[in-house]
Length: 509
Image 1 (tube, rainbow, N blue to C red):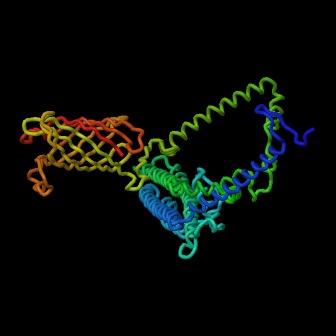
Image 2: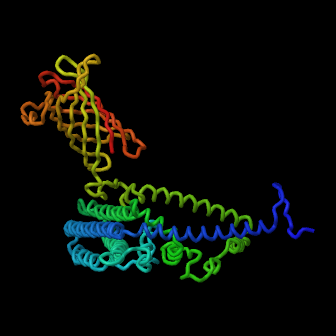
Image 3: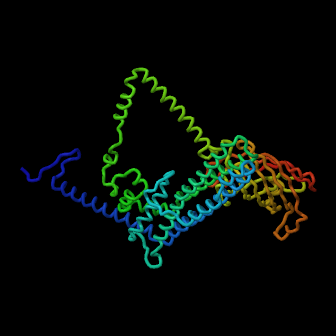
């Protein structure tokens, strides 16, 4: 009988010794691949984080800028609230001077003290602090900075760059602490508003304008809350360099273990592998009532009532669901940007929470004028920049260049037919329809050099009014398309007469 035992398979017969050797070789290959892959991942992450002057300076600058903006907005907010209370004090003094003096005693000093505390004491942020909406990127970045502080081998922080990781982490934690302190500011303002509301509720006839001043307090509080949320969203919006560094860092086993123990999410949900939480997930849930226990407790309560108890329970559940749906509708209407729950008639201006640059809108439009005896066919190419006054209205300015195409298909000749300066005002009427108008100055004489257009006496005026239709566009670069039908009511005064009806197509960026 041969010494080698053969194993049969669908492809034929393979000697056992060869098979054993193949399995051993395959195991060695898998092990070497795992080691090389882990090394390549760690080296890749090390390479991505091997430029602290570029990555950590950017994080530090971003956190520092947001910290300054948040501090400046908080100071403006508290100053506005203090001035609003002083106006309330003057109006209430006409009704009851003693109550006004008692209610608003040292209010300015209290607001100043709150601002001083906000500036001087940015609470040191801890990973276990979790309030409001969970910010996944902010949690990851903050945990990554703490990890890199404790594991400098993942960076090239040496020599002049030795303190960059520490500085970036300190600035980031200071910003998180500052944002956490906004809750103390909101709590202080809420306390003041409730105190004022209680005093005002004692009077049946308030002085004229007093209720409006109080509503101003609610509106300022709403805008500040939205502004803070805007800053949180900006912090939670990573750029490409940060995304790349975090993506590669997450592939390292050391950082994965650190995240399980030190992130906000880990502290909240006791993630598996959390070294700081040695208990098992089952042990972490110990003491909580199970579904079966709750069912038994409910049945024990309603069993003595028989069928009537079941009917009463069903009615109570339906009533609770109805009330919950009503509450959800109110919160959806007032609490998520639609208004202020204490001021139902208040319609917020969401542009107030944006910076000056954030309220700018950029656009371009094209308009073609037909040929006539005096002018060739001309196309106006214009660029505009506008400022959004509120959610519905905007104003802006622009400049245009007029290109001539010739007098017909048989006579095509490119030429510079003029330039223009324009202004506009857009007022939303309903939905995507807006009223629009503006004043324009146009130089409509062919020129070969911009030195020829300096004489303002050769410029003509156009007064435009009309309607505009806006169509949203799902594009990476374009946000909307606009179509304008305009009437130039000054065209009849021009010599030679210009086209009175204009149609323009515009694009918003």
